[in-house]
Image 1: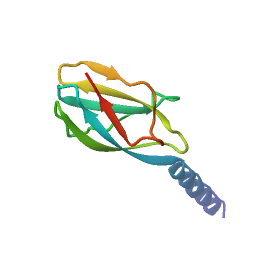
Image 2: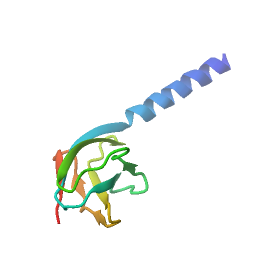
Image 3: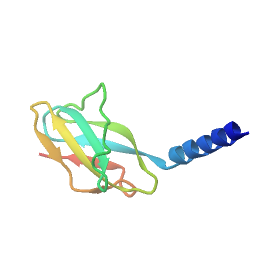
Length: 107
């Protein structure tokens, strides 16, 4: 009986963790003129929890890509950090991803 209760509690906790994430989609536009080799997106409140959303792909010097990322449920303010082919790093001001679905990195 105790095992069943523990199993149910574990399933409930797992469901709560899964429900606590929200998926966001954005169109990222690269106008810098250099290939964007990496893009980390993190909630501004918890920047240590970031995701590289350009796994196995780059955004060419003048190009764009749609990216999908997860964040805490209800969290809308994220910081974007682009890494370019020459190792230049550009960090955005905080972006409200609940109100905009496009972000452009400009020279």
